[in-house]
Length: 348
Image 1 (cartoon, rainbow, N blue to C red):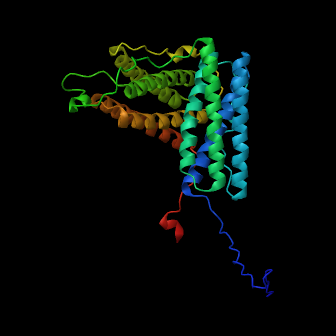
Image 2: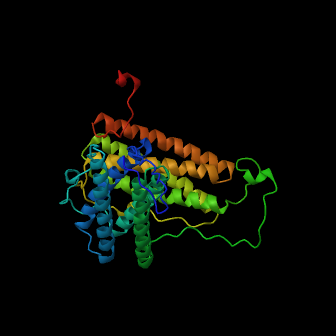
Image 3: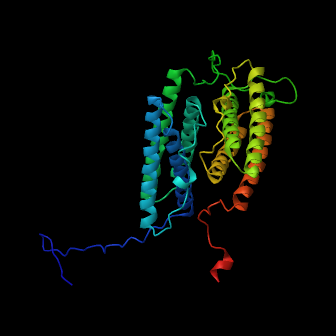
């Protein structure tokens, strides 16, 4: 061993270099990376199809940007998986789309489709970032958050310029700051009902918009599938969404607040499916999961008992519908297994 001294002829003590242990991906990181792959591959397929017939240049610009984002995410995810010697998920490929299929959705509905996808991924990526520990994964999801935010801003700007964006309702600006004085503030079913506060209005309006959009998705998917099982499932979804939209719409009307436009008017008469049944079922499953989470969030903040009960009731109905859809995916061998832990029996 070589003894080193400094300029004062004193021995130099070197701390032993610590070899950093390999930092493995956590269960949360594996789950969110897998979900990101599935979502990005679905988005790539859907946007490729939209680009085959969309002529409006403003919409095409957003579609091309969105396609580039999806492909960028898939490329980065591939690198992470390869570095981990982790099998790359199958997800969805060109085999799941028919680029020769006629137009199924109008331009206005495509914008609504892009808006919905952006909002879903904004929530998904921000959650994934908060659940991640490893630096490179946190960095990836941090960058991912900015991408759907940019898409959302572009979509809303175009929708506003075309006069097809439905703004949330306006309410009066309060004249002063006040505090709740009585438990009756929470009253819903018993006693005199107070008006819905702003946070409640925002969730009711969001529920109306989401279900109006879902009704259009179900209409389009039911119209083009050749599977009786899938068609019946989509038609049931349309009925549920119509009912939920009607409930939210009636709540807003009672408050003399405006109601959104029905997005199912954005479906053409095409009977040729642009997507595989597996992709359509997966897309609906994803939408169900997001809606359940949205209802759960609304339940916790609406501050009126009757509204809380409404959101729980609708959440449970959506959860039952989602479970039935999951069974269809499994029965047909369409559900790709997400990463999972080894059971105790597998360790012997």
